[in-house]
Length: 400
Image 1: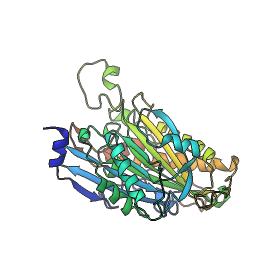
Image 2: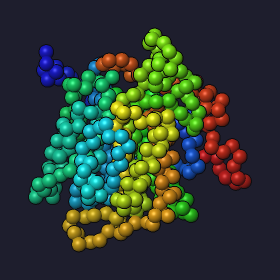
Image 3: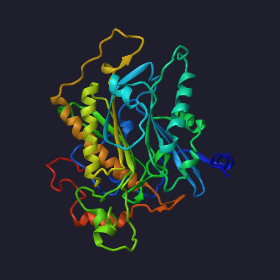
Image 4: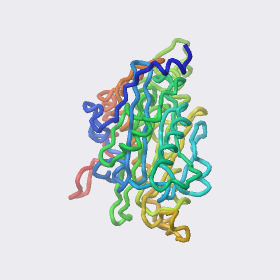
């Protein structure tokens, strides 16, 4: 039977995921892990940036299909009509990020950001374009630049079936909302892995104090990469015996757990902020998020497609197509951007850990990704004094 025929026989279990996913597994901060020096927002999620919406649909069928769609909307309006400045930074270009060249050329987003699996990019993009063309006021539109990113979930997902359908994309777009964001084995992260454990979707945020601008920065990641898992400097992957090139380094031909961890794989990172940054400084912001990925233990292998999409929601830098003569604000100064850079690094790093802490064990098409063992991980963090950034806080300062 051909893959196309097989797909016709599948009855997919589709759910719009909620914030109740994996309730028995804590987020990193809930487990006692504090990343960096800045405070998170109320939700510790990308949706702490006012107006940002997230929608997710998980597609699952037995052990063969584990994939989905995650949508990030910069605001609740029509993004094509009310565009936001944006930039994309390519850490390593082994990927299929649709829409890259126009975002780089014009420095703006004109569609929501959509994340899915590698071989579903084009189907997902077509579904989003079709949905956009049917929106009110779009009757005279003849060109759309859909931004669709991916990671390869072929270990758990029978990716050749390309199981993402238009209705999955539409449900993700139309269910996008503010509030808590589901993490772990959900949406576009349903079938992904991280450091040979189960990866997925993770999010985090940081709020700058008024003395540093008062801005909010949020990150959302789709983790599907490997290396040597490192948390707050603690060598978790090394201590647990699960890391890249283990067999070669030990000089044995006997397969062991963790062999070949993440030589391929990818990471999609989305950064949102209400700081009024122009496209140039948004690209500088995006570069810093790659540094956060490296801090988690990735050396960015040949086969890793690592991309960051950054955008600003600030009203002063919006580009409305019905006001072509309006000159947007240039945004904050270069010097004032430094605290925003730090916020992006901390939020991205914590988002990666949240993806792994919340992810559940999934048996899939060509193997199984076990969930990160939280208790042994926390024991390692305690051993290396890696839970708190500062055990001695100033008088009157609340513990994060």
